[in-house]
Image (cartoon, rainbow, N blue to C red; front, side, top):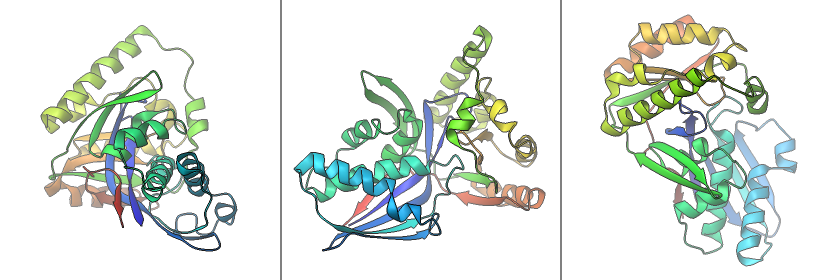
Length: 293
């Protein structure tokens, strides 16, 4: 079997630890039973020997499958890693969700997305990345009594993501460490109101108001200060037709949403300005992870 798990962009400005979006950039893992376990990696991490000795996907897969049927078998894992590490595009969540879903499938259990999501919460306690990897599209998430509750909507095919991927990573824990322990009432009210309005814009497909809706007062600028070029990324994006420009997750990537007919020009403008950064145009994934036997 082979599982494809999408990249995700979390927070989306004001939706800190709650809102997320799935992108058509996939990590692909093929798993076959064999006498001796083996790991082969293509793409991201292929040069890291440690990933063959202590692989998070394999560890979670083995833990999950043992909890389901008590069996410990050997498998060959072939990884095609397309989601860059430590760039705020949900590479860790892709690993977690993919490993759990694959284990359920191979163990012969029904792959229920809500079950996979709540199992993933045990490994990643912020639902804004794991939820869109499971459900696809735009997701609004809360956690209550150790369970994730999600509202979601599909995104129109004429909306594209122009993603700027810097050559410098950002560690999620270090990035979170830049944030204050307390926020002012005005900061909280601003983010609550903008996150609610942003959610409504996506659900009603009112994409023209995304720029107004995506304003954040809690985390973006504090995190962006670690890579000051990101402030210029936002300026260039808005000057060249972006509907929305936000830090993707904890960074360092920047998510820019625009209409299909503007995407190429926006990408070219960003690539011209930031020649050392990678700029890609991605479709929105509305399906979440996909398993093929």
